[in-house]
View (spheres, rainbow, N blue to C red):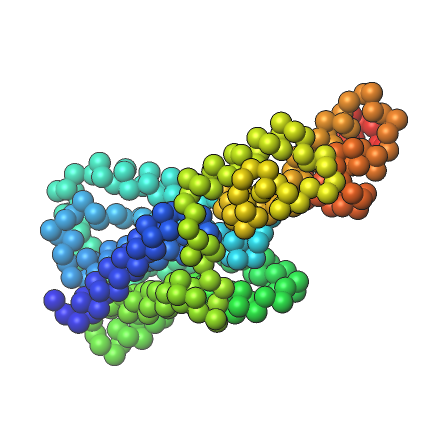
Length: 375
């Protein structure tokens, strides 16, 4: 076993161990940093796979050989969701991002299960042919439409969304720890993307110096080990309360995931039964007292289970009430401002802003789309 293999194995196992340690420590509670740990697992698995190829240990476990694998692309949707958690993106968009992640995950699982159906003998023959190929580096991505899609176009789509999201966040925030974290993360993502785009020239340069035909594997292992080191340091810093970055959300909380659900269910039940959302002055302290908890725990539970803050939580009920009132023919003579007031909003601007945030439409647009009436 050479030094590259030892280093790659070590960093791959460290990545998976750290990620699982933090995941189980938090009992898989969704604080946004779960996506960072997921990225660590994906990178760790990718690194260990490359170690198996380089060391030829894959001959001992040929069933793990997966030609045309896609799981390494999961890094991009995971990091996009991590970005959205730090920038407090609208939960509606975050749900769409999760659907994208599930799509990539299911397709990666399909590829893996499909490859498991290939007999081990056939895989052994494929590996023999693979090791007989003396060309350094993989084929040119730009000449193969499928590889171009997986290696360039899909990552670029994610990078574009991340870039736009980060630009808007930086313009409207004074949260320096979060900006510092996202600056560093952006740099890491860009380096990862650029390395994958320009790996072939790197392989050829190293090959010209070393003459080693499988030079792409040690180069990849070295780069991924460095990348995992950066991600691991990042994960350790946010979980130990570093002043440089925002700490992992609720990392020191005594509440469990089950407690979150109980508190949120109580809040929903009392708001719905007593129509508390119609009360214009409903506060976090008042609602927490009514359900027998404290404001901190209530706010924390709403954030953790519903991906929104207290104001958006209550406004969600008000928006639904406003929609019901607008669609009731008996209320046709009411102005939209009056509708908003009946639903619990204190001002017309607050009503319009909350309605647009929740539905993507103004009250006028909603009414026109449903009834053809422009109020």
